[in-house]
Image (cartoon, rainbow, N blue to C red; front, side, top):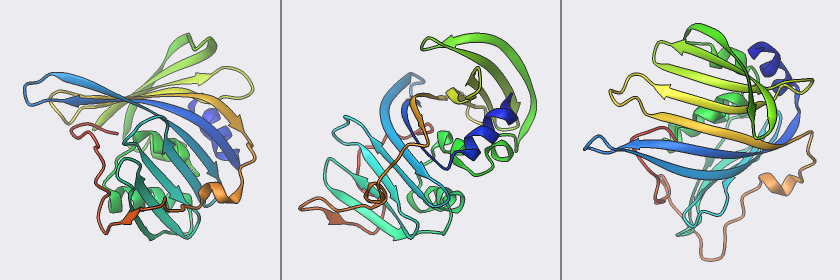
Length: 220
């Protein structure tokens, strides 16, 4: 089921999807706080992507047009731009290194997501048939060396991922990252300008990570 899903996802040359993420942050006292955000993600293979948080005053946006990658913060109009590799796979890796933004959901965007998802897997099983937002889905759970993760895959001819949960085992508190994927538009027609970042009036380019209010302590 996982291989079927990843093969189908990799076969889509372009798509849009709405991503609703819950990032669990653990305070010094041990309390778990869940921080929610929603983003619209647009992808055009092999070398274009845009992910922009929706409705968040201080939300982040990421643009990749095949030549450059830009991370921008809405609240103070700061942005950082850097040369980007020629492929989406390498750009995801470069963005994680350059901007220190760890996004487990991005693992689904690689050209060979099956290899990425199963890299550290030590075991997995089918949990059962369940329903996500009224859609029939197959629930799979995997154990890994550093993380455990679960995925819910739409049943039927379009095996799209609907929910993805990552549990970090290397931290005592074992925080979770949850992403719900909805409003899928396979083969969506997206204009070239979608992937090009245009600074807003009064925007300031910075050399480091844009000074946005980003939670720390979990995976986001």
